[in-house]
Image 1 (cartoon, helix red, strand yellow):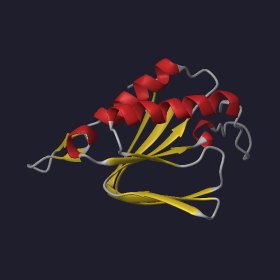
Image 2 (image 1 turned 180 degrees about the vertical axis):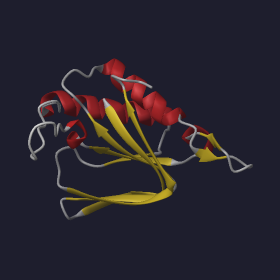
Image 3 (image 1 turned 135 degrees about the horizontal axis):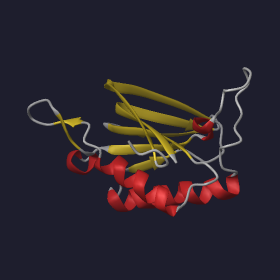
Amino acid sequence: MRAVIQRVRHASVVIDQKEERKISTGLLVLLGITHTDTLKDAEWICGKIARMRIFADAAGQMNLSLTETGGEILLISQFTLHASSKKGNRPSFIEAARPETALPLYEKCNEILQTLLPGKIKTGEFGADMQVSLTNDGPVTIIIDSVNPE
């Protein structure tokens, strides 16, 4: 499981050109799921996201997490995070999980995050056409991967 985490002042997603969901200060999380991911990957990545200390404390140091700041998460499914561009110019998405595998894990991530940060999670819609907007704060952008936790 791979996540691109962006600290934001605000972020929003428009789904199928109709519904808009938005957050204020918090994290925009683009989540990519591969066919080998399991519940263990979901638990690890969600815990890491909720506890990541990338918000400023009183001294201006990145020392606080969402659990301490009360920030929100906008969670967006993003199968293209597992794109391979090794051959040619057209990316291959063979490593991205098929919907029957990815959707339950995406929903489980939402559930885990809702438990860790009650009422603070908004989501996109799995498989929908979405337009995501954000104001990256910092900018701070971090990539984490449950297969290669650094």
